[in-house]
Every structure is written in structure tokens, then in C-alpha cells.
Image (cartoon, rainbow, N blue to C red):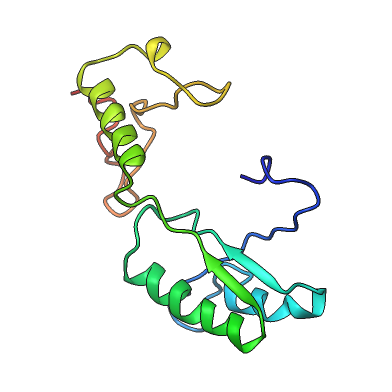
Length: 145
């Protein structure tokens, strides 16, 4: 997304949903803190894009639709949140395609890709995904359907 954003459009990666005890550090900057700083930077509006989420669930809706929009209003900013893909037909169709590629055993070189990097891995090498909660027990590593 950053690469596709014009250079004259300011953007910032921020985080939401602090969790854990208050003594434990969390990802920063917090979205509400970042919003509060925008008027001092001459900003009058913002667009909130929840990149890390594929559906509108309570965390997204509360943190962004309530808290972040309220913070925006308190600071005199116009704010809009982009919807998550959720059940959008194009998104769901893409998920179906990915499942069918895997189920049908489509070779990697025949899978479509949106970038020059090609399709990403969908089978881990043995030992790749260590389950740290259960000692060294790979999470389905190397297991093909």
C-alpha cells in the first residue's frame, strides 16, 4: 500500500487494541495518540485503513468506529474508516481460488500471482513452524493434504 500511495499523500502506520498488563510495552504509536497529533501537523482529515484485519468484528468496530472516530471528532478532524474485505464477493472468490489451488494440487508455477514475487509458500518445510507452547512439535510442517 505504501508503494502505491503518492509521495505527496502523508501516511503513518499506527496500532490499535492494546492488550496485556499496563506494565507490558505494546506496539506504538497508538492510533488515538496519532490522531490527536494531526491538527498540530496541519491535518484536517484522515482515512483509517485496518490493514491487519479481514473482517469487521468487535475489536475493529470498537477501536476504530467508536474510539478512533470519537478521538477524531474531539480534535476537529473529519475521519473515514475503510471497510474490511469481509464478505465482499471479490475477496471471497479469491479465497475460494486459493483453497481450490491447494485441494487440486495446482503446481506453484501455474498459480496466478499479483506481484513479481510469485505465489507464496503454503506448505512449510519440516521444522519450520515450531510450536513454542508444546516444545518442538511442528505445526503440520511438511504435511501435504
